[in-house]
Image (cartoon, rainbow, N blue to C red; front, top):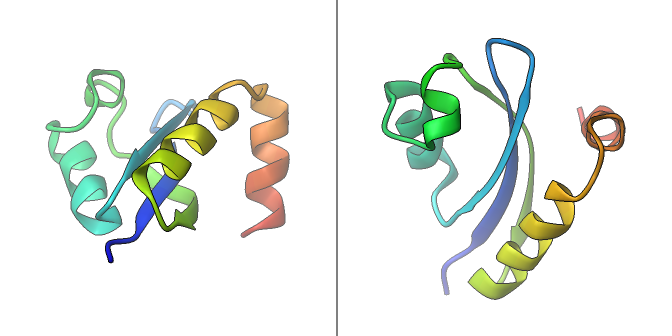
Length: 83
């Protein structure tokens, strides 16, 4: 069974990006090479500052949606607790 991940990236401009993937290392490389999300292309390099693991894609996507509803302050608090 494949693991699925939700992650938060810190972009070079200090902004945060939230996404999901089934391969963290490959996805981080894609973001930093300019082949990731449109949002991160002009904000490279990006650094992975947080991730969670889920058994299914559906669970990961549900959590991604929930994280995207958080304020920046709430995300920073979440990240800070897990560094």
